[in-house]
Image (tube, rainbow, N blue to C red; front, side, top):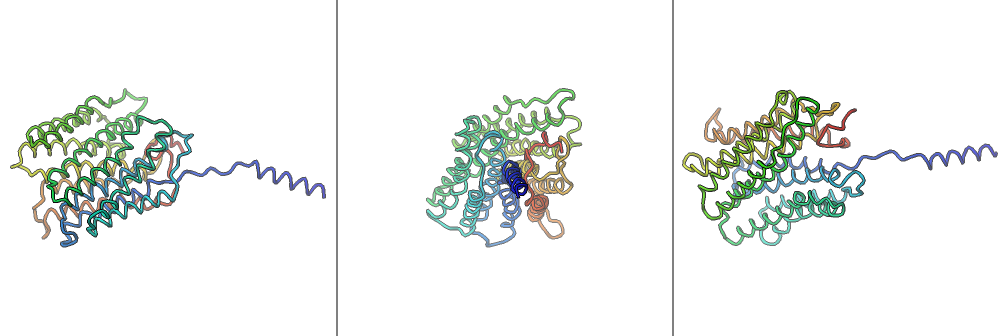
Length: 404
């Protein structure tokens, strides 16, 4: 009897002292990246589905910026938050806040699709960006991560910009140039995020070899300043000044891209996608600057697709796709499906810029561009869906610690 009691005590003590299995934190970026891919795939079909909305041009631009890019921003911020706040931080995104955030995103998209008007629309589109800010800003404030606060505050800027755009339209005030200003603002954000990520990933992959590439942050700051100057020029009606500034910004970003290129980049497919996405940023700025200077050669609305479909689409896909790439010791491995999706998005941008009216097999270039874009994001969704139920590896966007 005593022996049984002793055994029972030892067993209970062992169970009490036995450490609980480690549970990886939730993967809050995955639902947002999934929604982003689905919405990116569906939004351009407004051009081939007559009567879906009353103003397809506005709805298309609004939903690509605030719907697709907004979801991409949320996924990126929720990925980066644990590394920004530190491994010892207790701030983790639970299931309920994530569900509410996803519902808020869907409510905004539904309100835009149903063309709701008045305060209901303004409230619906504001819930997602403001909810995202509520999730991200307090942890950074508590951990005193002051350097990350400006980027984490972008959702608030998005909410204000969206409200300003919608209020202008509801008031009957001309919103001409508002979409252009928003796209240029996103170009600045891509310059900041991509300008850190691309050289950092290249240096991490090729560390220990012949030197490292320099980020050229001063050139990036100058390019961003030129884009902001262009925004001021557009506001004062000085399109020539704006065109020259955007053109110069594109040239500076192209120089940074050339400085980052090194032998072996294209042998690492994940790095190749990032580098080509940066090339799209430089190209989009140059094309837009040329259109602002020579509007008779190319319409500004057409040239904008170099930044939206080309730069935004490629950079978002290259960065978000890293969360679903296979892990190898010290590196990520982009799959053939992911490379094909990236190539399809790039092809869609080229068709939209160069051959929008060309007719092939009975379909005009616009329809082919929509099909290529949608195919690209459908291919992006394939590995995302396969990895949806799996725990997120750590770190999510880097392979520097993935030595398994």
